[in-house]
Image (cartoon, rainbow, N blue to C red; front, side, top):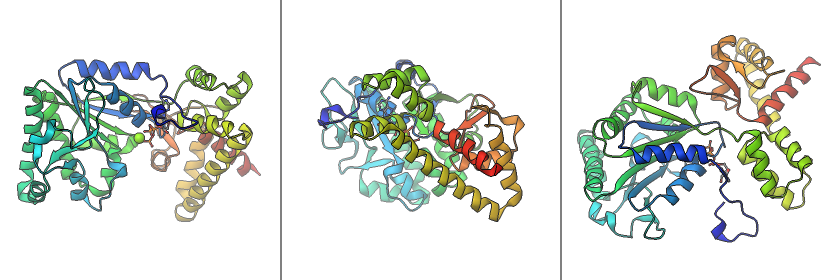
Length: 360
Ligand SMILES: Nc1ncnc2c1ncn2[C@@H]1O[C@H](COP(=O)(O)OP(=O)(O)OP(=O)(O)O)[C@@H](O)[C@H]1O
Ligand SMILES: [Mg+2]
């Protein structure tokens, strides 16, 4: 996506003006709420925030941690990964050595974590010293504010915590986030994920009613998807065909653009995605049929809701089956509406195909 890397084929960041504007409004206002950025898988959440922070002015300092790319085996390891290790602690913060990406001097500096020395980290991660960890972060944020810079703390792929961090730690961490935002107004916090069940869980555990703001990054609508494909010289016919099969899923559309450039037929690209998705859903269903026949039947009932419709009303379907399908990454449910839809157009088509095949 980074055109400056000079690949023969590359794709520039496209659109997302509305979402960017919403985030920029937040960044122009004193920090208030904890911000969640969520949306279906592969909708472009990470790309949006990455593009946005690269454009921020030097009035901001960004700490961006992506938990997906990290190597940790337990909760402590994960919390540790919110930190970038330095020897001189935050004295070095304004130096260049810890900077992950140094743009021009007019742009915000982006760090891969909150700076902390290895020695202090080892001390802090002893249970009894945990409070110093939070104090350290607060000090850094205060230091930034008093030097006229606004700290922006971003934690991407937060659902990684689900596996490694217990409820008590989630509660404490998110209470700390509330302290930094709503109470002290010290820094902006953005938390990103496509795992709607984990976000709901965090909301409940940390009692986030009225303390959090939710920003959705959904797949492109048809018109935007068409403009995007046109930019890469798709004919009307090819654009329609791609959208009929991939909808506005940016990850899929990009593959269509690249593979077409490589000389592949669009139908070949579509078929390969359809086959992979269909067989992966079949596999999940077969496993479920073996382990829980009742739930399997309810899941098929949920699928039937999509026979003639792109979305379904949550209240009409079995709760357990719905949760199973959301957890399996087959369906996506919006936080604000009581509707549920397949994660992508390809998933929708696969569900319909499976229903057809089951009739025989
Ligand atoms: N607006 C955009 N313009 C061009 N390319 C984009 C855009 N948004 C996303 N992409 C590209 O689409 C792909 C998927 O995007 P990305 O990884 O940001 O999605 P995501 O929502 O963060 O996914 P996940 O749910 O896995 O976290 C990436 O290769 C990314 O570079
Ligand atoms: Mg992402």
